[in-house]
Length: 224
Image (cartoon, rainbow, N blue to C red; front, side):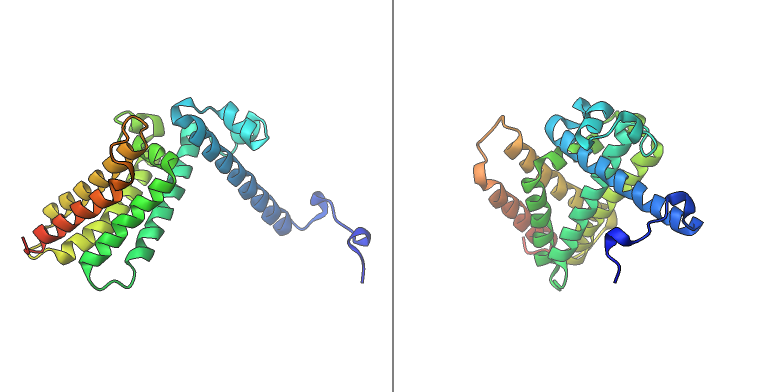
């Protein structure tokens, strides 16, 4: 058997075109992910407003010129980071609610999954809050903005479906409002807990969330 040292490695220009293309695609994907991971660290440290392509390039160990073939601006990288975060939360919520025939229990578990995810990753919550920034569409551009909004809509839809199932007389606009109010309350608790400006909540935030959810379930199911 030949050792690795004795194998003949063809230069890229001597490789079959299909192999060369696959190699380049894999390399581009790898480089792109390195940039995204570096940007994630920079965003965690200084936020979106404080980040720059230069800082991201330094964190990735590359030049700014190596970033521009993949991303035209830091906002595009932010969109990828936030998209991955929202997808991860969606999976966590699906896993938490999976197999739960009772909608009340499902929504409690789903809501708690969102809380735990962001509680462990407050920097991702900070990035997510940019979705509520009025200047966001102009900064991101219509395409990226709509994609991220649809992902957030999908997350809210997971909660809304459980609200619909447990409501005695569901009315879809009301179902949507209730799910959004629940999500807003949850995010508000997390902001207060991690803002550094108020420590009244302490570890009571999950208790307050459970209290709010319990009262909402009782009200919507007609038990109150």
